[in-house]
Image 1 (cartoon, helix red, strand yellow):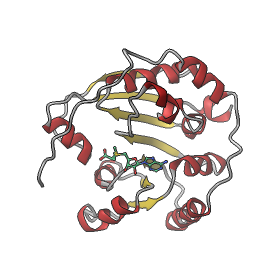
Image 2 (cartoon, rainbow, N blue to C red):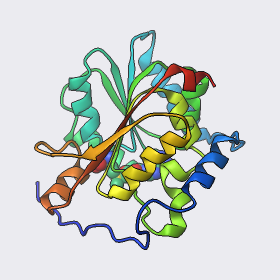
Image 3 (cartoon, rainbow, N blue to C red):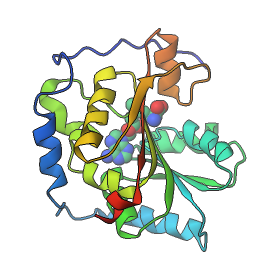
Length: 227
Ligand SMILES: C[S@@+](CC[C@H](N)C(=O)[O-])C[C@H]1O[C@@H](n2cnc3c(N)ncnc32)[C@H](O)[C@@H]1O
């Protein structure tokens, strides 16, 4: 596979956004009234059918792109069913061709995670691990609310529970995510990654371009899920 070169992130922010606390706490106090879109409801029903009578753990790979990570997570989490989610039909379609590595325990599906996360919470899925690898960073200061931790969907994301891992090539994104978890009453640990075997195409591209990658991990406990 040819490696494309990626420019490192530039932002007009010098560090975590000064409206982060205000934005996160406002979203945590509000319940989303946004109707669930039909296509994501259908996707959720399809995955529910695929899960059939499965009552073991579920691993989510949100914003999975082409689902390379979904396939490798399926090998790593053989005790679980692994669900990859991405809204891009083009990326999802590439999955079957390139990354279906013979594991039976994963499925990659086109869905908007904003609605899908809410359905996961409402249906009380037993999510043991949740990966959110290299979400779009939206580095412009004006775009804080487009970052997952600055969005209304953050409240559902933390209610899903399980062990969460978020990765980014923008240190500020990871620092902000960790702070947002703190504002929600959750402990987390963030660090620079030492990538030897990239998990995703974006991680491979960033590493090949000499960029650092960062990760934040948190155990989203059941108390938060219940609140
Ligand atoms: C930078 S790419 C990273 C893809 C993959 N995780 C990787 O590391 O190679 C971000 C992905 O997030 C997906 N995405 C963005 N917003 C989404 C949403 N609301 N629901 C589902 N996927 C979304 C995009 O389609 C894109 O594939």
